[in-house]
Image 1 (tube, rainbow, N blue to C red):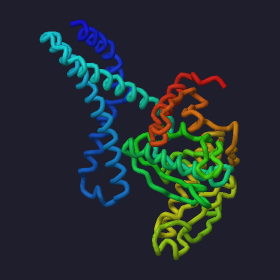
Image 2 (cartoon, rainbow, N blue to C red; image 1 turned 120 degrees about the vertical axis):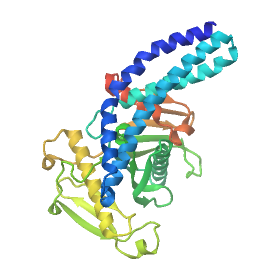
Image 3 (cartoon, rainbow, N blue to C red; image 1 turned 135 degrees about the vertical axis):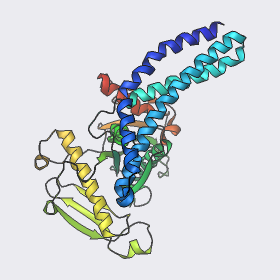
Image 4 (cartoon, helix red, strand yellow; image 1 turned 135 degrees about the horizontal axis):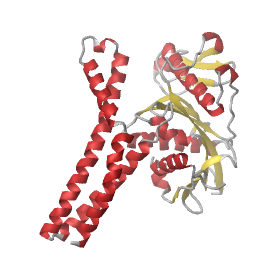
Length: 373
């Protein structure tokens, strides 16, 4: 039957892309590394260092997911080709919808896997630290910052990543003034580094009794979460440490002791804080992770040779500096200013459906095909 023959041609055209993925994904190296780490995890004393063991287990899972994903795509190809041949043999048109759906899923899976090969940056495989800052505009901007906070936590959930709140400062009446989260998962930073910048919202404000349209801004900082042995030296004399009581919900212990920690980096003026852990020592460790990430992010942005050469970059959270606009009224549209990618499904975007924007950015970065300003 003609429809099955057409899909056989499509499948044969797709096969070279599927085969090329083996090399692009580095499957041979991934299999060798997985076997080596699995052998290490079976050795005596493996769990003596719990933190190291957990990192190795996570790495094995990521490698196996990559290997199994490619094997699954190859199996899908074989199954679809068999289904086409069966449909032709039996002249059974009822199999056409199944072939159509299966081909669409396979094509989408191959495209997603191809995009994952673009994560070639030094820190792309790292976890990501996101910090949210409300712009000028009081309650309206603080509410917008909280909406972005929810949007990225929902994105993390969609991808099976874990999300941990490191710091959270409530807004005066609603929303938040600033917050920091850690998103843990394979290539979390590679995905989310495209989200670094100012985000603009246009809507009828729920806080305006006259129901006027308002424009609000909030900034999202995205940094890689780096191991302690990363090539960034932070000495005790490089920063000032302040302790204070937590201002948010967290239980009797957190609120009644000065366990929250703030670090101020002398050379750059960077300030980081954490108040979500129970002890001052844990909060300090988290602050050092955040500071290390911010310094590396600055180093990447300014191509500095030494940390001592770095001067802080200040994002202007205002009109004209946004990377993306979210319009709720008078029409619905979310548009990225860098790639030109847009969608009218605002609700889906605010519920974490950001893959279209992220993928468009990765493609533009790989090809240099940016939207005209």
